[in-house]
Image 1 (cartoon, rainbow, N blue to C red):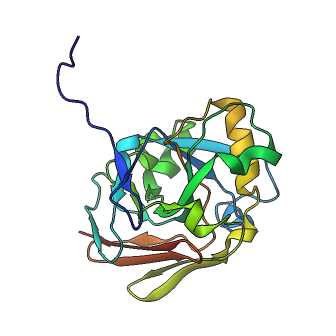
Image 2: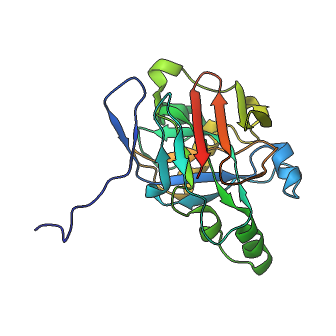
Length: 230
C-alpha cells in the first residue's frame, strides 16, 4: 500500500538541536487567567474548557529570527494571545494530577491568534469557534525547549509587546488551572499522545494587531518569539 500523495507532518524545531518535534494535535485552554476571563466577560473559577487548532496551524519561528504571519482573510479584528505551550512527550488517559508533569517533554512560547470578530459572531449564534481560532498560521510558536533544559515551569513572567509597547504582562503562577491540572482534565476527554501541544491560556491585555505590527513575546525560563504581521 502507498499514499495517494506524500503526507506532510507538521513539526516544530527543538531548541539548540537539529531535532524536530512532530505535532499531533493542538489543544487550547480558554479563559485560564482570572483577569483575562474578566475582560472577556466572565468571573470566577469555572471548570477548564478546551478548543482545538489544526496541527498544521503552527507557524514555527527559529530563535533569533522574526516570523512572518500573513494577516488572515475575513477579519478586521485580529487579536494576539501570548501563551505558555506545553509539549507532551508521554501519552495517556485519565492521568492523575500527581503524575501529570511526567508527561511533559518541553515548553514553548506561543501565540493563539484569534479572529475576534468571528469569535464574537460565533458566540452570539451559539456556533463553534473553528473559523475564529483554527485558521492557517494561527499558532505562531518558538522552538520547543526540552524540560531537561528548562526544568518544570510553574512560575515566571509571561509578556508581550507590540511595536515595543507593552500589551500583556503577568506570571505563569496566575493560571487558574495549572499545567498539571490541565493535563489531568484534558486526559479525561482525549487520550493524549506524544506530539500534542497544549496552549495553556493567555493573561489579560489581548488586543488587535494590524499589518506591519511586530509582536515580541517572552516567557521567563523558556524563551522568546518574534512575529511580524504581513
